[in-house]
Length: 119
Image (cartoon, rainbow, N blue to C red):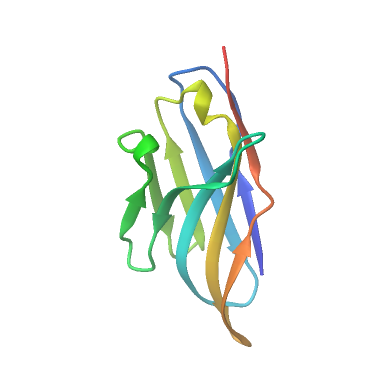
């Protein structure tokens, strides 16, 4: 199983980006998926989470600005980020609990994608 994030980049304050987290492999089921971020010198923190049923939760610092969604057919989870601020600058990671045909639910991390918000 692999998780691959994409969509990061450099954006001006107030701008938008959409991150993607695509899972591949012999996947039976994808349960909950979370987007996390880690800024230099800081701990990794949860940004948003979506359950297998589509229930979403957000960290207070992104509520109203970020939106998480998933495409079940494509095994992909998205993070739409609007009204970006310089403090949103970080490496963004996705984490998914995935069940395969030969293993029970296991957590996987992607390699991360850099988001830089700067003028």
